[in-house]
Image (cartoon, rainbow, N blue to C red; front, side):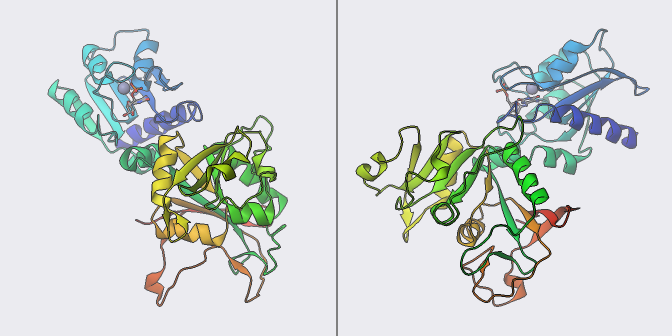
Length: 363
Ligand code: AOF
Ligand code: ZN
């Protein structure tokens, strides 16, 4: 039975993935309705932000009476009135007898109340099927709902000895074209790219997505004292730009920048932007996921402030062996190995010459 449920849950996840890029900030949800012999009767997924939930679509797609049937869904059915009526009510009304759920909804408006409503109506509920996979699918939604902050991944490209540039800031190119093409795919996935004034000044990157049919991420630049030139490549008008600056930055300095650039002003702590405040502000401005493409100092500051969820590291089979080369994380202090930040590796991929490692910070 459990293995059949797992198979159907994998199908829910596949269906849910079709909503990627279209449902944010809502969760990716897929749903299948089946009989006791595991024949699929109907299916559906959450297709567009603000529209029907997956369960409602699966129910609407059914051609026959659903009384006594089973429904499987990767996220607990909702119990609240949002932009659409509660799915739990519709499930009860249709006489479905058993519900199989992947994970509890982290949205405090729902969280376990959906399951409770179904149970109170006499429906059997099986929960926690492929829970880890379901959580992975909705990692951005979980972070958003539980912390009201964006999901943050740091991307680095290093040598085997962890260097991102030589002492003269030469970094073109540590990793090869195949790796850099993977970065383009990532830029297409995240809502925004975050970088620092230092990177803009030293590398003058454009941080756009150059994939065919790709979409440009929002570009966020932390520039506490507005030191970057308004003529930097990153300030072209190809996608939304947000400059995060200090609440002490004079208006006259901001006025030099093109009017299509958005400014967010944050407090300063010892001459640096309060990164916690910045993340909350970005979330309130509709930024739900971020990939950081910056230098060691910002990378480390974000990690130190416990603001990072994931790391994607491209490693080139090169050794720099230069004492003054630039580290991918810089500014910390570790007496012992126990002072390290620990990650859980999710996947490793051999690219043409380089290796790509993806992992999560253990919290
Ligand atoms: C979705 N799609 O398939 C499911 C969701 O504002 P609303 O009415 O669209 O409600 C959004 C909430 O509903 C969402 O935060 C989550 O808690 C719950 N379930 N949402 O967008 C779905 N099943
Ligand atoms: Zn719902």
